[in-house]
Image (cartoon, rainbow over all chains, first blue to last red; front, side, top):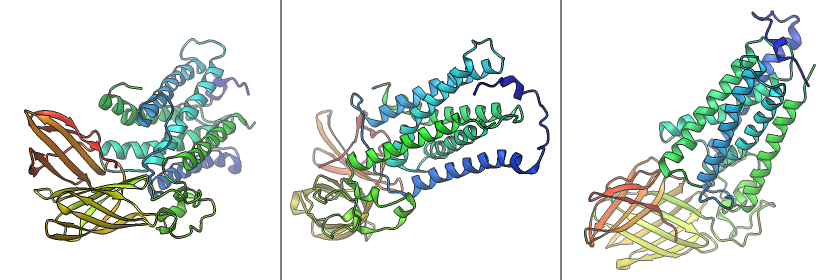
Length: 194
Length: 223
């Protein structure tokens, strides 16, 4: 599992795919899965009957507060992701374990974000009643599609060097927008409460 | 080389999501029936069986034993003549409803919901609401002040629903009721010391409303 991350970055511009078969699948499969995941989440949110409520965690005043803090945690780990990625690519000085840091902070961010998404889709669904909500619904579905694509891309060596940084950057950007349109909005509207 | 770590990450997320969903479906305040009916795509079918609950022996084998009364939910809609709005909130077999024409006619009604989804709610001035919950909507009539209004109220998802704010502002007793429809439209009446008038808009997200210079919060109404 330990790979010199710099090795992959040295083939720029990307070599054309050597043989048609597996190389094309490398990009097409993740792209297809990303689209399918995003679409499936959106369709589920739109079609299923929003419950309006779901279970809450003890110690929090509302599910909105729980979700906002979970989302903020995920966003915090996403910031760690950016910094550790820069270390992995040697753009910042970093410890030898920066790759491990990158992997695990990413996993935690993802696993923390999943319950938030489940609650959103189960209780609220895909809504369009104002622009903040439309953007949040769209990007919320999209972000899990991008994440799936990134995970699948990671399985391959010798990707074009720019690809992972671009997908990772996209992931961070979208997650930030999702956070801005939900948790930040929540804290600004209801105050920073637990 | 193919790495498996990322796949495990995705799998873990998927399992966590499924776990949370099952937790929601079995412990949520909402009856499990509608949720367990099948994969998401099946939910589009407006099958009345799971939501109407127990009167008809539900065909869904996974539904929790149908002891619970009508599902906890809010409903909002208009009267057939489009003059007024009606919203009903159901919680644990009890209901509160609000009828409002947005100008001067309003009534709060309360009562119980039968196991078959039928309800007869009564309010001040001899007003009566008869309705039946069927699938995702309540169909019924309201008799109020000599008028007879048929209505259909569909299941409302936040921020649509029923809101109320009461306060004392400059020695006047303020009582405001709002129905926020799924279109975002609001129908509300503000009563100052018993005198009804059209209500200002509330912010449906937060319930914030400014009345006579004072900022109040309209809250969702439950029985």
